[in-house]
Length: 255
Length: 271
Image (cartoon, rainbow over all chains, first blue to last red; front, side, top):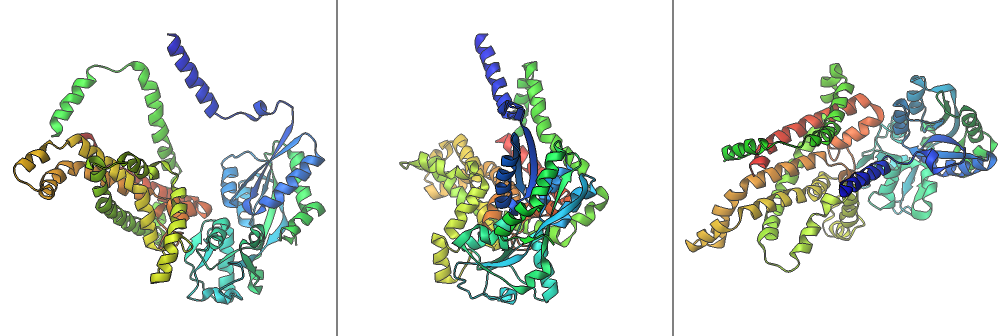
């Protein structure tokens, strides 16, 4: 009998553990939590802004959830709890605004553009967008379904040059990974992604990138549990401090 | 062959089950079945034919069936003999060998894909040699998809066949030997027919695993329509832009999976 009770007790404990600890259990103080959903390309910038925001607002814990903008938008539409959403394209933000989940109108706080990424020293001598169509090169791009791939498509339409990539990756980081691991000769990623990996790759600017500049909108969610903090965070991002950090990471300022 | 099995089942059922088992058993069933129902509820049925007949979907289906078939054949040709060696071979360290063969079952597939990438990728040990000697690059090709699928599916065939070999024992082969059959003849005429059901169910399992392969493929082979973008990869990508298409394709994979299980099940029960 005792043994059976022990077994049941153990099972209950394991199940309780699987459920995950509620925030209230981990943090006994009545601190406020601000949940921010942000595009993966904002990782470095928002992590820095998180520190700043927490210093300015004692007792506030900023929880950041990074991911592909389209994934985050789907999570929000399906009831994911968040205060702020910062997307890497206007269309992914539109998914959330169309569902009536954003308070007011989202503000564009930064812009990003594509850059050619090659192995360090650019051994294949790639000078511009047209070179990417060379048949001897293994080129990777993002799939047209994601923002960085949609940008490639716009440049192809504008220039009339069609690329024949060896792979269309599901997100910008895996495109970059193909080049950093040496499996592709060149790829098209955001200029901020090139900056984030340092000397492992080399970035090559090309003028046609201006044809497909991506907007980054930020919005406070209508269902935000902390609407005031959410507005303050959005203000920090689009304000002078936020813009300085964004510029440092290679983003182009808000229009 | 199946008739005695059925009678035994009926006899065992007469013993009765502890009633308490029904609750967790029901929960377990619901956990598997309900998400599939959810998928059905979310499906845009009027648009279904259009979504499934898109060029991207047809390319992915064709590629999935082609690569899964190739991988299954390779699994049989290479995994079959490996199962025989594991079940009947007398070799020191066979136990260690068996554990290594099981590795893809336990590893996250994406880890398998990375491992393949660092072996046969352009900068990998074997990949560099292939490129220098033959000018061949493996990643981003259909062959890479087949390699990734074979890697993850091999243990399914090996384990299933090894089990069949162990349960069938070696008595008939011993008799064949006393009658003057060479090991090769006894293997061909006695062993193979005996374990054929086990081989078939193993092959169906391997085929199903190949069809569902995602992690190793995306990490190693990349994603390009008609070349490397199999159905699971297309589902993952479609999710980004067209949820209806992703759900429709998921439903297609569920249907294929049900067909595969329907083919494989009777044999699994019989063996």
